[in-house]
Length: 488
Image (tube, rainbow, N blue to C red; front, side, top):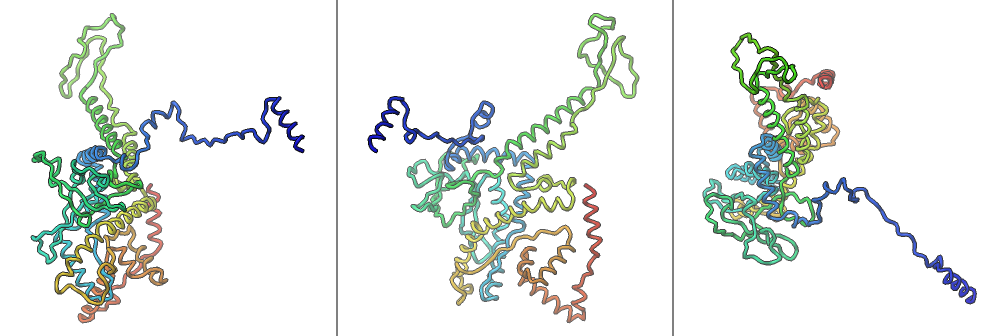
């Protein structure tokens, strides 16, 4: 047997070929069209890089993006309106606290005191500013401080600072401090370095002074798009070139229309060069009188310029580019443009669903990152007051609570009320959920309703008849909806 194998090996050596079992198998290569670089796409992908989130969002890059975003928001009406609408829809008139401890009296007393404090510090206004800063600057910072001038017994206050003031001092040279934030061994923020004055202040003398604030006193709210990201970038960043194009196109259309309007007419001749025609100076203006009949030189004609701007595609272009601008914020066109003329009832409600889901995500992030931190700091000061301490309701961090936001009005209140009654009758919802959708506290609403019913009984009114509303025929609502669909 060994002699047989030796003969085979000698045969392959003489032929110069390797045995079949020793031949190298062919290499299989997977190919993706998106990974192929050609002469056509090389310029398009020229700026693609492999930078990390920290390197891509360097302080200089974030500074440029902030300045450009602020410029557009300050000078572009659409940009300003989109940012304001986003803040108003997300925050509204402000969140309302509802405690869910075992003591109803404690819940009511603390909720009333927190509401008075929120009005004193203008909590809703500051939350709207933070939402605008997150969309425009990419991040929002708030410092939990003490304000002895507050009219409430609790002196906790919220001081907002811009992202420009959070930066690492040049004297700090360690690997734990990145972009003005010092982290511990587990990656948690430990300290924030904040400038006492804004670097863009005109009265800034050039001397930089920093305050080292503990992380427990600083609220940092931004959207994390990549793992390892520690600072935010403007949410409208992808739309910044589109905002510039929109403004340039509008100005170009206006300039073309104005140029055409500046000329009342043009004097021309069909005669060949050197032909029979009276002499006329090129580009010489001719004074025209109103409602006058003029004679032209022999061989010359007068023609009026036709205004070709704005063209028929002007409105369509602005609609498409504005729709692309609002897409990075999950905002439909009719909300971004405040124009629903091209929508019917069904398409308008369908486009709003994605936008409202995005708002709920932002509100949930606002609750976890901002409001819960503020509530914990407020309760830590509240329990120091002698009449605020409550026994037998558990430790303070475990107090159950929830936040109520402004409800959204339904386009057809009759249909919504009917669906609400059906859900309650089928036990597929609760009063707490239904009131929460309207931005109301169900316990407070029921207490108020009980007071109204009691007063109506004292006055001899019938509460059942007072609360009864005749349902409109279903055909009317369907006809109205069909009418809106036909209008498109």
